[in-house]
Image 1 (cartoon, rainbow, N blue to C red):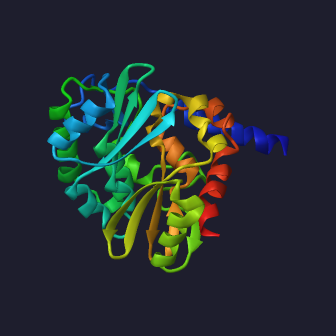
Image 2: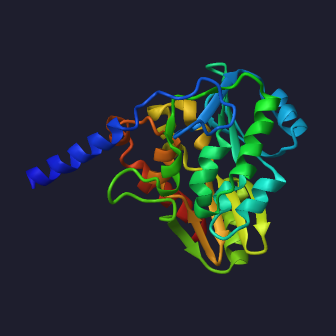
Length: 282
């Protein structure tokens, strides 16, 4: 047993030591510079009102705003192109982009459309579509720089922590029923106060933003507020099922620099996320 535990810890350490690279292009231009792809691109602080105005002028649609941490605001936004791609079966997660505005650190951080597009669209990924979103953002917010967070571009579709850990398709099942029944439950639970947004992608698929319990959502304080824009969590309602990205997958792909010690400090979070998100569908 001791040897088995030691082997697991050794493998975990090896995996996360590979997540700590900080190389990459200084300035984000296309979002895909060679083999590595940066997770975020960052810039100087602008307030929420100004950011919304810039995004709308660039042709984006503001979906919602959310405060994942104190003195921090996430702007969730989309476009007709993103929604068209996300309407494809099992691709709803690709419908939105996120901008985290950190009023405390006076910085902004965008999710890289190319990075998350490749991860979420899998074999359906269309580089022209997702790169065009990045180009629009770069024009609206000049001077953005690449984050240290990065991963191999070609490996994103098959991303997982390590052996036996979940892939993109290994989602958490939250509830079953007709789409209409599941939407009604999500909207009615606690009088709808936990639902942040709802996007209809097709007659058969919807993407919802949902608020986690206060205790569960605190994990971003432990592993770094810079990437707190991964909240709110998203729920997909499609084909009579309500599902969510596995917490182990979603956190890891959003924090590729996080080392083993960081994950060990939030060991209970994945289970807590599932419990929080299942409650509306019971």
